[in-house]
Length: 195
Image (cartoon, rainbow, N blue to C red; front, side, top):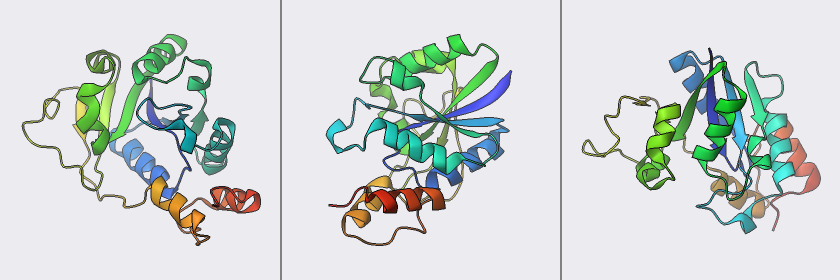
């Protein structure tokens, strides 16, 4: 079974912290590949603020190009929207029976995990690997804190967020240090996220 990490996100836009987190998680659990699953419509987010789906997928392809084991994944483009993780995982496990999938998520998402559609079903399909996020401390008495299928990585927190990067771009500020080079160049050339 090929150990494969799944990092879901709207990636609006993808930034360096996504890549650093993915590399840390891959190293931590010896994952052979990380798939960046581009979500067309997260049920918990306003779709009107998103860059076009194909543009976001293209940015992820630019960011992961040349990085061994990293790839963009558009599986959710062919699934009903809004996209629910359980539905995507069922589709992927059916399509790829040769892979052992691991769901990568931030601690902020773990805190909301009890409200996700069929959280227990998700845990029956995959192991969940959690990375720290600013302001998202997991209490010891949290329902899923000691679940055998959930592991929390002890690592430095990444302060970057796509929200902050979009705000900087909207103010015409430089964000080249926050973005992979090809992504920064593409955003600049097309004047994306400019208000």
